[in-house]
Structure formats: structure tokens, C-alpha cells
Image 1 (tube, one colour):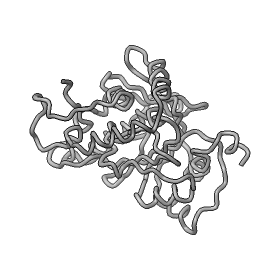
Image 2 (cartoon, rainbow, N blue to C red):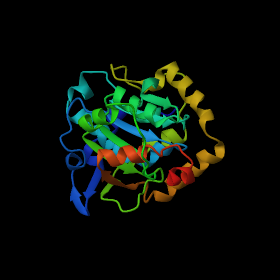
Image 3 (cartoon, rainbow, N blue to C red):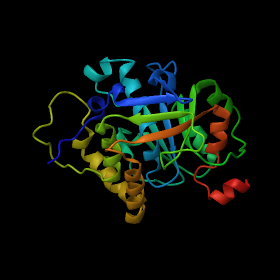
Image 4 (tube, rainbow, N blue to C red):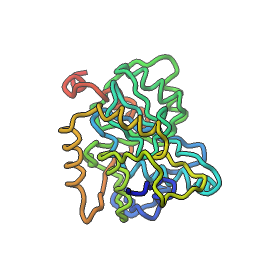
Amino acid sequence: METAMHVVTLLKADMFDVEIDGKPASIAQALPDWNPHDRFGLVIDEALGGIGATHLLQIAITSFYDVKPSRRTQLTVYPEIYAFHIGKGYGAHAPYDFWPARREVITSLDHREVLDAINDRGITRLAVPDRAPREVVHRPKEVDAALDRIASAFVYSPSGRVADPDLVISGNDRRTEYNPNSALRPRYSDSRPASVSTAAKPVKELDSSYQDWLRKREHDLTAEERAFVERRRQELRQDGLVTETYRRVGVREALMRLASAGLDRDTAAAG
């Protein structure tokens, strides 16, 4: 049986190469002034769409642990990351450590509710899919709350590549593809692999509720959709490694693009 890999020990900052505006850069430049209380939010609006933001999510995870090293050694905490599925579930992203299940929030198509959910969870770094900007009148003060709190915003593509990027993140270690592979092909394990340490670390794979969640979310997408996403990811891989591109944007622009997430593309463009 394959041994479960745990994000807390799987990922290290030096597994990623970063470019900003075409020049070599650091994770700290991509996520400036990261602090122990930062929370990363990923908006998802198509089948396993969050896979397109794999590396941005993973450098946020490494930042979460690196800013407070005791999280890797003494504590048993999962990273403060949250997925927001718009209108319906789009497949379990829990293998990335969106766990427990409350970290995958399934909202209605009411984009006011989506922003409410983002604010409720205190998201400070936000990634939204590359959708057409659209004006939405939110509930009083919700936009101001987001503007006050969110320090960084990004546009990503479920394909892994956006038009006109200014941020490039590349994996240089094949372990950076373990999580997307696990989301594409969920690893079910109902018993403890003999090689798994008994150390007090988060081991979601051994939690029956984790297995239940994966099975529940299996029905979010068809076999054809899963095969399409897997094919798309494979096409990006060179020697088992992927380079993804993003755009850094202001929070207002991110909220306008968020307002089209989950909508029919023609409807969003017309709006």
C-alpha cells in the first residue's frame, strides 16, 4: 500500500522557482510580508479547477509553516487555507490539506454570499479564477472589510496558465506534483500503512471522515471531466514538473472577477 505523504513534511520552499515581471524572485516577494496569521483563500468554479493554482497554493502552505517553524515540529495544525466552491462542489481539493472538511466551503451562486464567506474566514491572500470583471452590489461594509484585510490578490486559470502573467511559479522537485495527482486520483486508505510514523502529526488519510469526504465529492464531476483535467495537467508537465502563471491584481479587481465566478461565461461577459 502506498504510504500517505503529508503536506507538512512533503513541501519545502526550495522546491519552487519564482519569477516576477520576468526576473528571478523569491516566495517572500510573491507573498510579501507573510505573517503567522495569514489565511489563503482559493475560489473554484470548475471541475477540479483549483489544480490550476497548485503552486501558488503550495508556496502559501510553505509560508504558513516557515513563518512559524513550530508548526512543522511541535504542533499538529493544518495550514490555514480555504477553498470556496461557487454554486456547487467541484471535486475534493482536500489532498492539498484543505482539511477538516469545513475548509472546503460550498456557497450559493449569490456572489454576496461568497464575499461574506471569504470575510467570515478572515482570508488575507486571495486567488480567483480568470473571469470577466463584473460589478456586484455587496452587503454594506463587506467590500470595505475585504479591502482592509486582504494583503494580496491573484488571478489564476484552472488550466495553470493565464494571459499576460506577471508571476511565474515552477516546481523543481517532482514532489510538487503529488498533491494535484492525489486530487485527480484520490488515494483511499482505510488502514494505517505500516510505514507511517506514529508521531503526533496531522494524518488526515487515516481519518474515516476524510475517506467519507473524498467519496462524497467524487460525484461532483464526471469521469470525462476528471480525465480532461488530468490530461490538461499532464500536457503542462516536462520531466514531471509544471510551470504555472498568474497575474497579481488589486483587491477591487479580484472582487470584480470573483463576481463572474461560477456563471455562464457569456452571461458573465454580458453582465
